[in-house]
Length: 103
Image 1 (cartoon, rainbow, N blue to C red):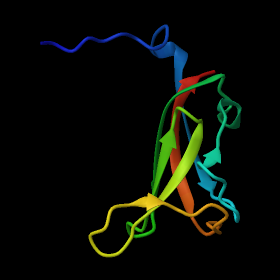
Image 2: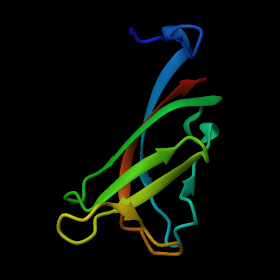
Image 3: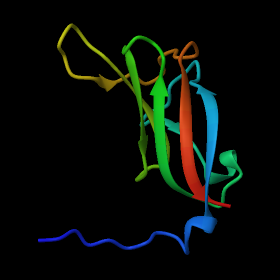
Image 4: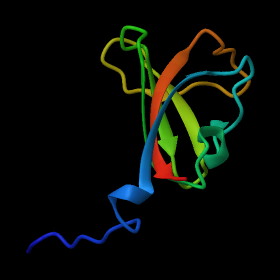
């Protein structure tokens, strides 16, 4: 069975990419840091990719269902990543995020 594909915008001229460095807050909110299309001079967010240069300790993840940037942290050696605690101070963590969307 072949994949079924459908364009998400009118065409490549409609989609733009914005790259920003984002620093997490000193009191991490439940379910992640909210981000809005307007934070990136966009009218609609289509795709977000994020990474942190902290030797693999953190992994940011965009949640399109809530419009938030969640921060996952590694546990003990070999343990799965889990979301950082609500109200935790993550102000030393900066993520570089690529947002693709429509102006």
